Amino acid sequence: MATACIAACLGLVAYLRAPERPANRLFAVNSFTMALWVFLTFMAMASTDRDEVIVLLRALHFVAPFWVATLVDFVWVFPERLNYAPPRRRLMLYGSCLVFASVAATPALIRDLEVTPETPLVKFGWPLLMLLVWVVPVLVYLNHLLWHKVRTLGGTARVQIIYVLAGYLAVETVVFLLDFALPLWTGTTTYSRWSVVSFLFTAALITLAIAKYRLWDLGSLVRRMAAIVLALGGVGYWLATRKKSSGPTVIKA
Image 1: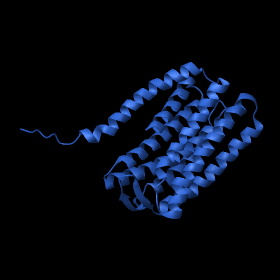
Image 2 (image 1 turned 120 degrees about the horizontal axis):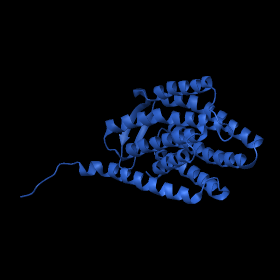
Image 3 (image 1 turned 135 degrees about the horizontal axis):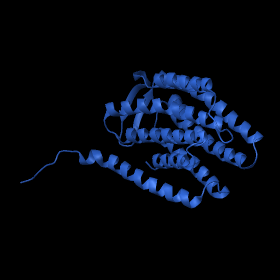
Image 4 (image 1 turned 30 degrees about the vertical axis):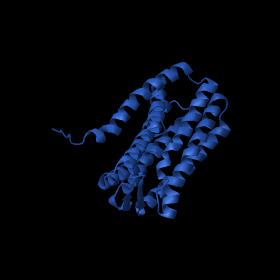
């Protein structure tokens, strides 16, 4: 829940900073997509109903590719462009993403599922491998694009790209290992619940860049993030305790 709140906060603060800039809009969309992915993961981990866990797992594997697609869309314009990428390029990106996300959300995704007190143990089917076929080339292209910008841009723009590259490389590596490599290699998802937590490293690097290089007013950033965290934390606490308080009321004589 902390990861989901922080992702949503970063997205909202970036949007409020300059809502007219495509980079800020796309970063906000990407951050909210990450927050949704994390929240669905949290709900899947917290649920004890087998059918509900299956639905949540299919939903989060549908959302995950869109996090990758929105990240590519963001990097296309960040930090130097003031307009979106060409429509045909974006249509190809999101169209292919929708196809593979739909495949990943089919019932064949889950071959077997065991709900344990710690975490659901899942055996994935062939749709996970199909999703990997799309994700890996897109991430290779993304990192190549970021590295190209690191080498060609200068000044503050180069600093921003370096922090973004380092932060998202960390997320990509952890997610690839825990959500794809280990489940496909070992057949277990024991550690998959920790993959989304790696976004905290990205959030820390972006916040450090903001503070160190004064990209935004730090005082305003802290106040906004504190207000948003309190609001989202209240909603998250209500959702987490909703099931506990929804049981039947027993009145004793």
